[in-house]
Image 1 (cartoon, rainbow, N blue to C red):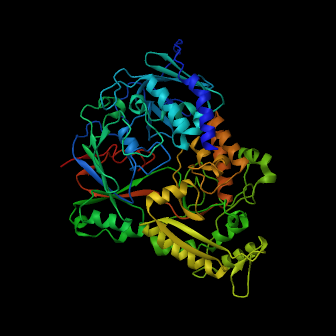
Image 2: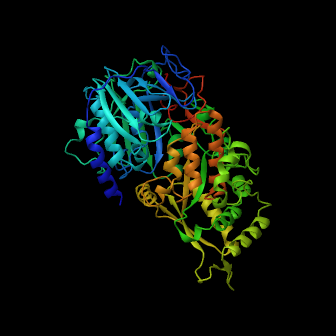
Image 3: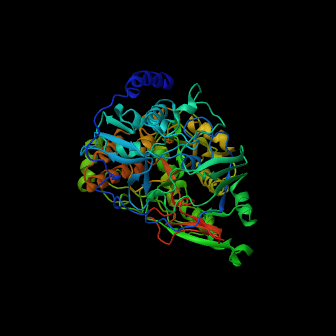
Length: 604
């Protein structure tokens, strides 16, 4: 079905997108665009507020990753590409400022133009923009890239592509996209699409997993690498964009290297041994207790805590509702009740990490747990009241354990399971009316040490319910294949969410992801109300309407009981060699893509 759909879409759109009719340019191009209001920085800004324009150039940073990679094309479904490759080697028409909820400034494009309704967007490329081989970045490259990504690239590019009515080259360096739907975010989404070189892919299969890297225009090119072991990104001495105001103080390092190891524990030991130079710690207890090794006490390694103001996102065990045992919300609630968060949190983090209360908690976009929807939130949800799960409108809050045995929640879980048709037999094994035992598997990456510990504790906690859960660990390449095909019962999910959620929410939660492979809708949810809230978010012309729609979506996701939530941190914990520095002024997103290594520098 997917190939047939792409083939049909490709045939319909090829004639439109390769039509290069020159039409008059728009009247009011600007240096940037914001989701709401105007960009904070003026046209003549010197640098991003969280970058140091006087940062020295040189040095390198070495990261450690668990797992491996087997592809150098991060823009397709097949294969597993190295972390960081896209952002280091390719560029977008516009670049994001992480000190604003969602504002973009010119990068490959010198200007962007749209109307009040945002029914179109037009980008004008900078005349000096060049690929790493020295060839100019052209409007034809932009059209070819957007068409290719939207038709045969990774499915995450499809949603925006289907909203394009036409695309035309409007001048020597200009390209215009006209939309077929109302979606105020689309100009920004297209501004963040990577631009690739059309000539490189002539006569080649873009969808094939390959170790031929796409040619980009970014600050780095791929240097030495050994698939699955390490990869080095080296600064392009002829990088066209080094003097742009947007890039001042960014991409200061000569080399960014990723070394791959068997598991997280080995990565940490490699950091302690000096083999890698920066390590992001996600365990609060470990951060407090295990950083007294000699390099830290001597000052050779610095511990930095980077605060942020972004939503918690969701991090936990996701239930695949494509599997019949997870289809009933009462079953999912029972499995959430059985998870003794308080005990597991104490064991794993020392009890210091706050629990994720909802997908957008820790921000103005999050619902108020346990409270009924009121005002605009309620108005948005009421038309769907008959189809919504209990708690969406009236309020939902996660259960709290009453001790190590979690007796109260286990009793509540048993009652819910019985309502859903599951009862224990004479041996205490939970079975349905057909006599099938309740059993499922938790699928995890090899080397996910902390998550494995949580899974094993959870498996034990499920036994009083008569549920048999098992743990399977596989390598990262196999994990990617199985997740893309939704071939799992339960697995670990992380969705980092921003202060300006938009079209990506469709990729995360929409019905298309139930069957189409490669989406991020791991739970397999199919909730028309959720898609309506996303539409309301995208079409909101006032910030208060956007907030109401996002909170309503938060209610639907949280009360959907798709995920057993873990915890989050209000700051990021980064340990690094003392020579690695970052600016004193931090962006509101804190330690987020665009911070490390982007605005860091090396100072001997």
